[in-house]
Length: 160
Image (tube, rainbow, N blue to C red; front, top):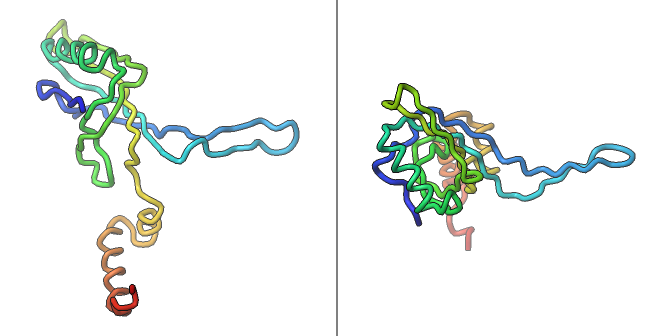
């Protein structure tokens, strides 16, 4: 798997994301609009801004051209995923293989903007969602304590 070059900065500024819309809406001749799920996997479009030196801009453009085949190949990139939003390497693809480069100060400071598509599920599962609604922000510890309590009530023999 292709990895993000270490000479390029990790995304520290300007990370935002939009969930992929997986709904298909059909207009009906009469009655309500029909809406259904196109697929069950949910990805996200992450909008990335990188603050770079002129050298890093050159490396980024060469990386996209040669390593990513003008943006057609997937690569590992650090994104804030999961409930902790800690930067974690995940497999992404540059959306449409396009990016923007902006000169911020006469050739000294540059900014690179691009959108990546992350196809892994980075959110809560249905069970985690129920636990989060029930227990609040500290749901993981509360849920684990609830599981321990149930395990103590029922002997482990009943699993057989």
